[in-house]
Amino acid sequence: MELYEYTVHELVEKLEKGEITSKEITESYFNRIKQIDPKVKAYVSTLEESALEKAKKVDEDRKSGKAVSKFAGIPIGIKDNMCITGTKTTCSSKMLENFVAPYNATVIEKLNKEDLVYLGKLNMDEFAMGSSTEYSAFFPTHNPWNLDRVPGGSSGGSAAAVSAEIAPWALGSDTGGSIRQPASLCGVIGLKPTYGLVSRYGLVAYASSLDQIGPITKDVTDSAMLLNLIAGHDEKDSTSMDIEKKDYTLSLVNNVKGMKIGLPKEYIGEGINEEVKKSILEVAKKYEELGATVEECSLDTGKYATAAYYIVACAEASSNLGRFDGIRYGYRSEKFENLKDIYRNSRSEGFGQEVKRRIILGTYVLSSGYYDAYYKKAQKVRTVIKKSYDELFKKYDLLLTPTSPTTAFKIGEKSNNPLEMYLADICTVPVNIGGLPGMSIPCSLDSKGLPISFQLIGNAFEEEKIFRAAYTYEQNTNFRQNKPTFKGGNE
Ligand code: GLN
Image (cartoon, rainbow, N blue to C red):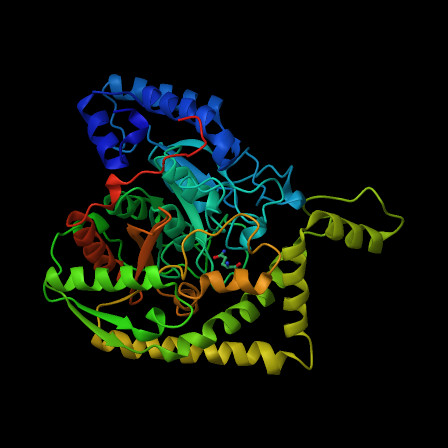
């Protein structure tokens, strides 16, 4: 078995036993990246030199008997909207193509403490706006299961990298589904933590009241370990919660007896592909066999979530992206005669079409006369949706839905139809609206050989229940025996 094939917890064990070195792991990844990434195109930039240097240092520390973190020397890939000092953070936008971060995001500070090794920065939809990674200003990423298809988005680079085994694990960000939906389409595990559990400091903001950083991993154990590393209060992020730190690996228990799972009927109905629906019902059956109670329930306010989401998200984006004006940050047009030209031309040339669409939409819903009709109404809908979740969680430990209404679609299939693209997130967006945690877990392959995944939604700050149920499912099934084959690739 090659080193890149192991999960992180397996690598950690081998490092601890002295069977392998960080240099060997890191080299194995860069060799693999050189071989595979020209086809998948998950990385916007790689950091080979600094990675090997760090690996070497960690190996020396370990050898000399210094106390090191058990994760010291483990490589990781980072979505290109999180700042690492001295490296480019582009958000896959021409606007930030040459932006070198002068500071670390809090999640990076936390990973630095454990001496993780950065493989590189991963591709995404520009400013995290999209569901396919086709809106990257640089190039689209390809789905490792079928290179003609999208990996999902916006964290498509992160999900494709873990799926193609060119990163053992990765960080993504999720505003309306951007961790879970690409994880689903690429057949890996993606967790969006509860809003406020992980610091957003140093994550380039898209929609601040919805954004959350989370792990994309090969299995549930790695997900719990990575969440352990990044969760926790941060005074630099006023929305981060000051709650007791938990060890999520304690929830990796192979037992769901007594758990109550709700199956909202609206998410196995209209708009959901038949094969996906069938798979979700099989997952429900499996949970019953394993001793949980699964009951159909209703989440009928979910149908308003996508509309409310696009109003709130665009409103916040229009404000957050105001700072990219050609003066304070980012790209500056060469064509200008006065200040107004600098603003107009820099923004016109620096932003892609989808980002501009959202800035215009967001500015519109916030403008006087429309604010009450759209923005305020959307905020009210948000409260209503949150209340329906509260009601459901009085009765259930978890909710079970598909992660995505379809499996991976073809590159180009939806990129010119914004509405179609927005509907790729109907199952994930309500969870962000409620500020809740959600995990995508792969369960089967469709008739085209593409991964189908289910989503477990938990109550706020109850990630433990998600881990327990996801782990139990994983231990009693065998999705991970399937691997992408890189048809047409150089495997
Ligand atoms: N696809 C959704 C959007 O375009 C979600 C993106 C995300 O979660 N960052 O806004």
